[in-house]
Image 1 (cartoon, rainbow, N blue to C red):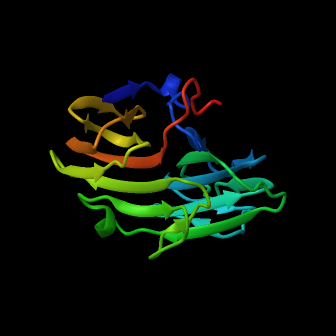
Image 2: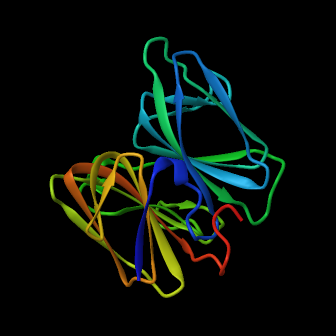
Length: 215
């Protein structure tokens, strides 16, 4: 049984399949960026400010919204003139790469995430969750002081827990903002908020022996 803690410099080395990376993207007012999704898909969550999809006058994504992008090049920018934008981006291998960019957006309320795991994405779209098309399940939670959530793990499955803000514990091991934990060969994941934390739980298949998310 294992609960392994990874610093920010070790992200992407978890012993799992599908999930490639978790990265933070920060854009200053008026700044733009691009992500080339060559055989990959990206799931982005806005933490602060907002970003515009495509051109500066394109659809907006605000805090609480998740944007799924696959295929081609994903262009986004910060349309604000005064406020910086901070977003987290989860990158997955896409089973059927496509050259054409496609995006989907979903909004999840604070109540949906308060002290419980809210389902953001599943292999297939269901009950308002985004459909990833890969064997991954994405959950988010906003935990108050010492609040705890539980998640069951089936054999052959692993969970990567990432702290977006605050700090907490995962299976009784301390985890700080920007850090991640990989849990495998366990029946259950237990996440506690400490002084309060926003967390992502990503459930994915275990890697075969001798491989990691890097290959």
